[in-house]
Length: 388
Image (cartoon, rainbow, N blue to C red; front, side, top):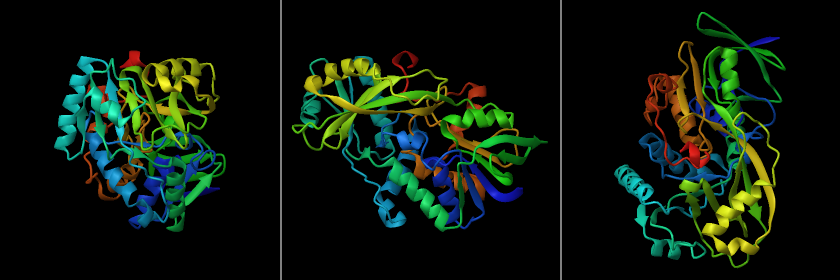
């Protein structure tokens, strides 16, 4: 059986579902989303849920500003509480050269309207009393940053898209793609064949594999990331922010009554999501160095997911070169959830209007890699320190 559809989206995570919703909201109802398992069951369901304005590249700051505004009105627009908690993000460093980079970032961010400031070690101790600060040179703090619920947001995008006429096919794996003369003629799946008027690749860590089926290079690779969650810590100071130490690729935040912290990094070619509890030792060493209070904490829960990494730690968004009406929104390198509302909006603009109006996404073109114009996002915390 072969079916035609105006827009076909490969990937039923938060990005694919956001794109579907934004297309449907603008009146394009002939949209189908293909998800190989269940909606949100891939990387979106394993996300930590961070939302921040603190990036080192202007395009990411602009995407964050647009997304944060959407999260703030999410309940009114979508009829579902996203669990937004603006607890702030606190970035800390023991390196003078990194602090100088922080200061440059803050100047750029403030120029774009972000309420962010540099903080001294004494101020850091007041913001988060559990942190060891004697070796720090400073940091930055943005009170508007925070966290929300990835599973809830993904489900809401999918539900609203369905209500507006979008077809979401779960358990539908892409098995092949026929391309001729630069046109995507047919996408073969484990269910039916689909002839798309336009194709969007939003398959997260699997997007590089979809690129291979298309005969194009989408430089997206999976990177296994683990997180560990502690037992309840009754004396944990209330209202503490997300704490990130970029130099050590480590972060932690409140998770209910406990603490969630970054775990190990797996091999970059693996889709394995089995937790390796041996990695807790390395993460604990980083944690105890910065938060000695965790010495006696028991970490009893963990999960792992596959981040969709690009060579420069920035997303790929825009048309796919050499193909007609084919687009990509992938490779968010750990920031797909926080940028999902903005991504849905600008990709809908690109497809329906011929260009993104809300945010200029030209810097995120896949062609930047061939041109040697990498963005080199400095504040990507999902890469090993030796990778920058």
